[in-house]
Length: 256
Length: 340
Image (cartoon, rainbow over all chains, first blue to last red; front, side, top):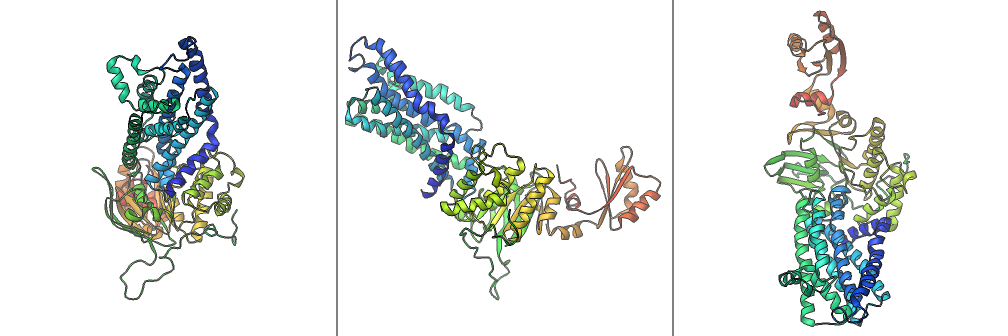
């Protein structure tokens, strides 16, 4: 693990030089989304009621969904192009592997860094949510680890996938046909009860739905222990499966 | 810049000592080369059906500059990657610094400096950060590492560019930075995979000069190249590889003495038909090579042979007498020119 931290340190120092580029996704987007959709569109939806969507104002409903959705996006984004850069474009992985670091050190160090990025963005998002007065329960603090869990649950399997790719083309497909539909239809913007019956079943099984439901339950203080544990268990299983797969695909790609 | 008498580049940082260095074999022990840093027996690398390295044997002694010479695809880089513990061996045995790469890869790599064909530098970071972060991979303490980085910047003549990003640096500067980076952990063994490919002559000479300094300090160098002049300049001993096998081994001088004549007469004739000229002049030399653009006559007395050619009444449009080089050795061994 000490060696994985050396790889982590590279990511950290390298981010210190390039952090400006991520300002918009980390800081600006939560404000823009909450202002435009939460406040603007919410005004139309609420019609002056404080209980328009599932018994709360629309922005209350929306904010935890966006928190989980943003965590997913950062977790997935940081696991595509940067992994390709490590293998092929900048070859930072290859530089690391010529030193005492092993493949698993490179993998864990990078994964830990992606989780850090998700954590940073989630913390900022929660602060913005607080500023918009959308936090209803003291349990909301636990939405922070829940969001980080959601980001990590996407990061690990996407890293495993990215290590199998020769070009970045599949990342765009993954984004268009995976990440964006999940973002839109996992109960982020509207309750999945609005979907046709069979699609509700599909939505309930998607990974982002687990994160959205968990974050919403915590932020609104509507906990249901077994259901929420099941959501968390689903996300933990994705991390475990993703890490196992990534260990395989990283080794196959980097040790030849 | 490092002057003679300055502290050595290898000193300054605590590097694990090489147990094989400076020891002599006890009396009656079997013939193991004293201080063999790398020892390969039947070393083989296969990728699926393709055999890149086909059962090669070699020993690299401590403090030696050892070369792998051969055209692209000869198996040089695959051999190199196995020595650097980046690529598992398919068959045979390999010991590096007395350890087994399959079991002690990380430990071995902590004592190796690798200069890969691709620089693998982070273009967005500064020159200094590239060195610093690489040193951190080895777990070097921060304070010592900072001093070490300053030394290496001097060594690579990059002090003035220390705080610039790598992106705008010239190829020669990047190469020097990559070599400096490989030295950050004070390695016992430095592996250079085609260190000067793509560099202009001036940049190559500066790089060679840096490598001489390392050699003088007793660092073992393993170099692959497809430039014979580079091999002749830098290597104490080398192997010529072709199609995954070792075609010949020895010092540059030994190889030339053994596989070529003392001198070579290069002839160029007017029209096509070097082939037929070759046949008619065959009796004037020990051996004749016909190349697309010229004829090579291998002989120990170049001037006398050239006189004899001229006396045959078919004067070449250009003629040159030169000493044999490694390229001639390679041509003789494989029937092909070295640079593809």
